[in-house]
Length: 204
Ligand SMILES: Cc1cc2nc3c(=O)[nH]c(=O)nc-3n(C[C@H](O)[C@H](O)[C@H](O)COP(=O)(O)O)c2cc1C
Image (cartoon, rainbow, N blue to C red; front, side):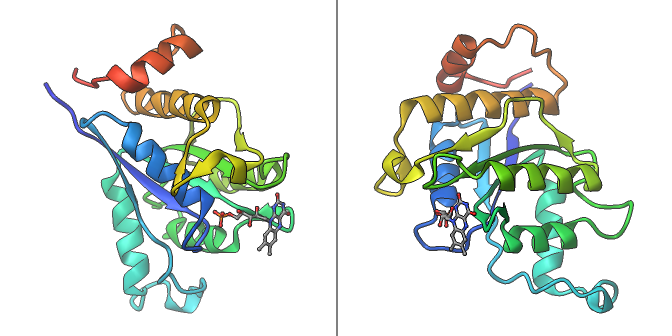
């Protein structure tokens, strides 16, 4: 049986030339045809307001929740702003987290990354993002934190071009796909994953 894996991409940056969007675009280009990665933009998601979270839920929020529901897994990138995760992303996750106990993200495999011009790569934002995902009870992929430092020097023409960073990222994405189907990961060595990222065909 051929399987198409649908990954939803969320970027905590609204910036036109966002490094996080560039990373998501790069991953999308590296994937085999049987795995899709679609970026869902957060520009129209309003500030969280519990008064609106019911009969009057904004359409952009309904669309966001639906996009998460329809995805097999979610890949999230957040900038670090003042040592914290992106407010845009936190806001989106707060909307996604509701209705309480029925979030479309609960139980869904998620992989996260941060990128920054600083050598620290947004690691503090990464930690906060992971905490929020724990609260929502998303299934975080077991993988070393993906933090991309000095990201400006690793981008070209709107794409990530640093081979080591791409390799590390794609290994994580493979883990994410494996998590969807509860495939074993013991044999997933770095070398194996680099190979898989170009030839991988999730047909089961
Ligand atoms: C308001 C503001 C605060 C920032 N604070 C941090 C920070 O605490 N740590 C860090 O590594 N980078 C910080 N940065 C730099 C961002 O990491 C950088 O702008 C990054 O490229 C944003 O992601 P993007 O390219 O996807 O838009 C800050 C940038 C802004 C605009």
